[in-house]
Amino acid sequence: MTVSSGLGGESMSFLGSELELSMEQLQRAGAASIVRSLINYSSEGHGLPGIELFAGSAGWVTETIMAGCEPLSLVEYSSDKCSLLESKFPGSDVVCCDVIADFPKVAARVASSSVISMDNPSAIFGTEGQYCEHFDVLPLVLNVDSTLQRVVVLNLNIRPFGMSKISGWSERRDEFYGSTNDWGLTEYIDFYRCLCQNFGWHVREISSIPRRGTFLQFLVLFLERTS
Image 1 (cartoon, helix red, strand yellow):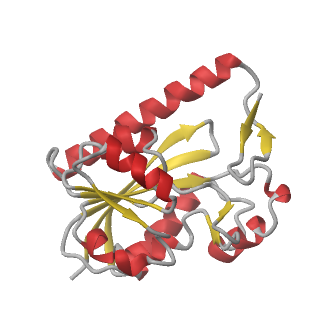
Image 2: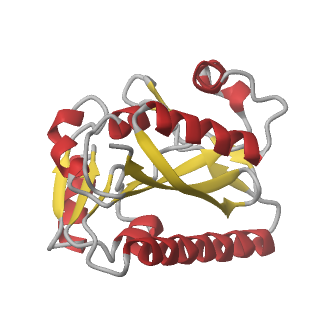
């Protein structure tokens, strides 16, 4: 079985059987449930202001993790998908823009959000392939000052596959992380802890939850300002 990479329709071999596909769907649903429970436990319940920075067409991340946020902001580049978001979530604040290039348009919403989700593509993306994973958007988010405690949810790709088929992906990862040849999950968590601290955030906790197989994780960062 193959799955689309989301890059011009190119497909890559990933899942070998319908059983594996079913297991992946169960794993993703379980991960979303755990993330939602962690957010509720950390922030004492529902009614949290939240923002989804790559809302797409309101897939399972938006529906299972972010739907309980109130108010909810949804950011998406495609105007067609923005219209779909407005119809699916009539009470939400939909912002149609390139969240990275036009970040000032959403910075105030990020500052007032307790939950920030980045369900970004897990490779190179953008109209000219100028972005990679969450490497461009996460520093923008961390640089927004806020007195709120903050839960940041992002995709962590521990063992990328098919990098040789996507020009520039390996180089961008090396630029962001340095060499990860001998890294396990602990090293990645230490990296994000240091990154957040460098932006002036105290890291209360970092949780990692498998989202798909063993290579893609939800990284859940529980942050508060150090001063």
